[in-house]
Length: 185
Figure (cartoon, rainbow, N blue to C red):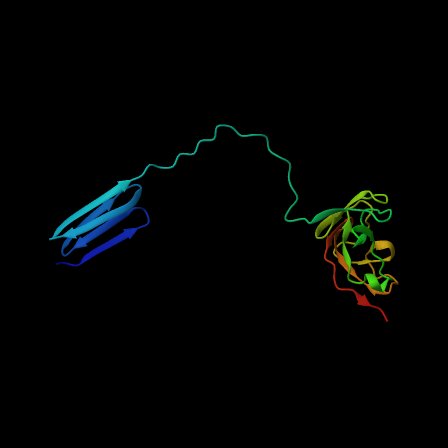
């Protein structure tokens, strides 16, 4: 029996050689070629498949642009009157301003408020991502720190624990990136 050599290229063409005999096959779309060799006879069967058809009957209106990436925002009741753009902690299921002078709160800040609310009203807090607030007045591309009453500043304040809250992206936008608190001695 002669050796059988099959060469196939990606555009659905094949060359089949048995001894000195070669057969070239070219098919536009191929699925599952079946080749058998018996007593010097070559039998090739090729199944042709239809090209996929995609039909779009109609397109709806373009939707609103969503936030980029994953943004972690949660809603909790306020434990005290809260303003937006402040670092907060969650205690007993309610939000309170993070106090960098209270050592029992060190490392417990959970995020920055993106809405305001009175006591027991729901307030949204963002754990990560960016926040834009017209009340911010930062220099761009600077580290930001938590001061008294959870306020965010572009310089370290006179507090017991230094906590970096993130980095300013522009004068009124920050990227949240809380760092471990540093105890001032």
